[in-house]
Amino acid sequence: MGGLKFLFTGDYSREEDRHLSCAEVPPTRPDLLITESTFGTATHVPRIERETSLTQVIHSTLHNGGKCLLPVFALGRAQEILLILDEYWQEHSDLQNFPIFYASDLAKKCMAVYQRYINMMNDNIRKRFTETNHNPFHFKYIKNITNIEKLDDLNPCVIIASPGMLQNGISRKVLERWSPDPKNSLIMTGYSVEGTMAKNILTEPNEIPSITDPDLMIPRRINIEEISFAAHVDYEQNSEFIELVNPKTIILVHGESNPMGRLKSALLSKYQKLKNTEEEVKVYNPRNGSKLSLEFKGIKVVKVMGQLATALPKDGEVVNGVLVQKNFDLNLLKVEDLREFSGLTTTVVKQRQTLRCNANKHLVNWQFTQMFGYVNVNVDVDQEYTFEVMGSVLITLNEHDGLASVEWQSGMVEDTIADSSIAILMSCDSSPASVKISSQQHDHHHNHNHNEASKSEETPVKEESEDVKMEIDEETNIAVKQEKLPNDDDSDSEPKTPVLELHADYRETTRLQRVCELLKVQFGDSFSSFPEENRGSIKIGNTTVKIDYTDFKVSCANPKAALKGRVEGVLGRTLDLVAPLSHN
Image 1 (cartoon, rainbow, N blue to C red):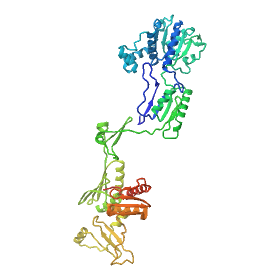
Image 2: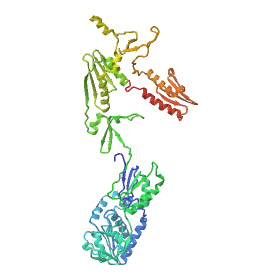
Image 3: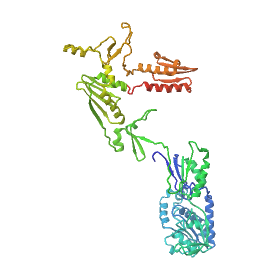
Image 4: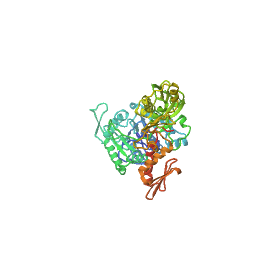
């Protein structure tokens, strides 16, 4: 459930009885085990000894002229005791004249299920059915009765009746009828809950109250025996099962406060050595109706379906898709497969915004390159310039109309890139950087020769003044202003660093140069670069680490050297630092 595995035992037994198999150990480790704690730290008598004690008490009671009452639950223990007695009667001919009555309407209905689904029983029952072609639940010496008033119990007999707690019903009526006779026997075969007649009578009181009139007390002289055939594990079985299941967390239920507390203490003592470790086992015994809050870190399993499942991914490959959750099942699909495999429909929201932009394409390209490092130009013709930003936002510039349109498919990342793009376009022709980079010196002399003016518009202009030089970048057609410092030689000195440089140079050679500069700052003279051989090295002491410039892999003669790990960390941060937001 939700990626977590819960195991709830219910009432269970790890001992195979006459007709049922023992509880199996699940193949996977549960995160949470909810187990019964009925008998706490008590230990059961072996099954053979229990059966022997039961048959001996019944045999002696009948031969002494008495009658036996066995209160049972309608399902489970009743069928086991019936199998035991029917087999015992078969082996002892001296008992075959004593009737065995089975008095329970519910148990009769349950018996029909056992008779029908014989193949669900244990190997012993199936083997007997196969060898004899006789259903073991078709008893030879046991009779079913539905009305206690028609019961002829003047002679010795055995009655197996429900309910097992003797609170009411047939078993309570028979108890009150047989209680005064000391030759009779009451054999308690199941677990007795506090506050019930079954629990009280085990204390062997002198009197018991009548079910019809609580003020009427009935003498209790009947012999009382407790031979438990309860379908509950004892401490040894429960502890062994918990150890085999190996849960991370245990919750104890279905038990009285004291036995449950003793079982909790025993389990905590058993797993004391695991305390404060990752394998620590936590045990809880909450009270009835109380709330217990637990935290789990489960592993969620996702099923890949559709087109994504056509081929196994390679090691390290990232699988992208839409995660669909239905109840506690998680499926990973492509958007195109949603309708077929999940019944869901998809809607794509495409957005478009048009705004005024008077900047030319070269200035727009420069601004976006400064921001994102790279843009993919799709169309570059007269009056139309279209490019894509980070593979998600399409921008079209119409210089003739002075308009720019921004198109994108709605999404968190796409919306963020679109917002940034719109902000750049809105300030592209008025930002200080744009004004400074595109400014040109002139003498304010207006030439009214329109032909010359037209010609000058088509030809890149290169102007110089005494202190300022303007150069036109051949690729971007953007004027870059360079200033000459005072006292510079006009004839021999080269132009100094531009007032505003283009920083969006992400060519491989430039990026490699920047990486080398950062490594030089970090490791000093220990770093040596050999760009002609596509490698670099860092030597500190006797340890030398080599860097391959083709894939920036780091190698060292000693793979566990501390210097190798340090270089890998520094190189990783350096590559992230010099990389643009978008790559070609």
